[in-house]
Length: 292
Image 1 (cartoon, rainbow, N blue to C red):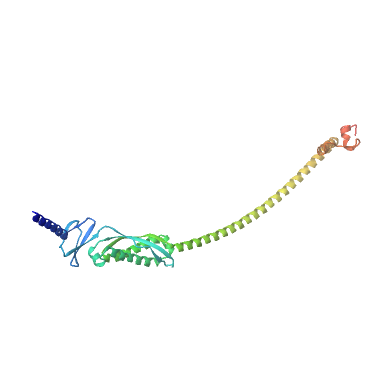
Image 2 (image 1 turned 45 degrees about the vertical axis):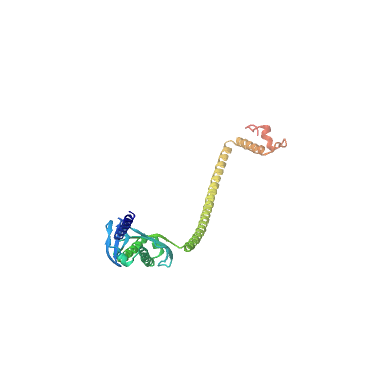
């Protein structure tokens, strides 16, 4: 009983080993390249269980989906001799496994070769433009030219490149700091010039305002003197007319004005002689027609 079971087990293991050596599975996201004795003989893209010749056929499975290429950050010299740090990325797909195997063999070799293609095209295109072009609409055209060139060269490798883009395109840190310091100095110089110009304008405006003020005050004083003179002339005319009509009342009125001004400006006590002319109207009253 033990011997038949042993032989059955051996037969089962051998059958499983034979099945594993003669079959392989292609998933929906893969394509297989059959290599017979070192020479590629066919491509299988139909998913499912497939058969091969044991000990003779070797199966290389390649991903049929979009693959990501991320080359390392590199420094590039532009047409105006400025350095920038550029990092790109690309999406590609293996469309011809046979050509891919003959040109590149492995996925690592493919990434290295495509990275060199992207870097070469990148340096070629950026070496023809200046830094301001990367900050304008010209950047899209530059990326499009790089992508077209990489796509054409990648076709010879059995690879289809769908896009090439910039992930980063910046000035190196030391260059950025130098540009920042230069921009800062330039802005400080412009600020000083603007302040000096503003001070000059303020002085001109102040001088003009002072000149206009002096002219206005001079004109106002002249007009005031004229008006004052005209007023004094009219007052004198009124006083002359009043004196002509009733000289005694005019003298009385003037005396009362004199009293008011003298008494208002004097201190609490005022000492006068009883026979002074100043007190005549106060003592005798106003003069009448019969009494002078």
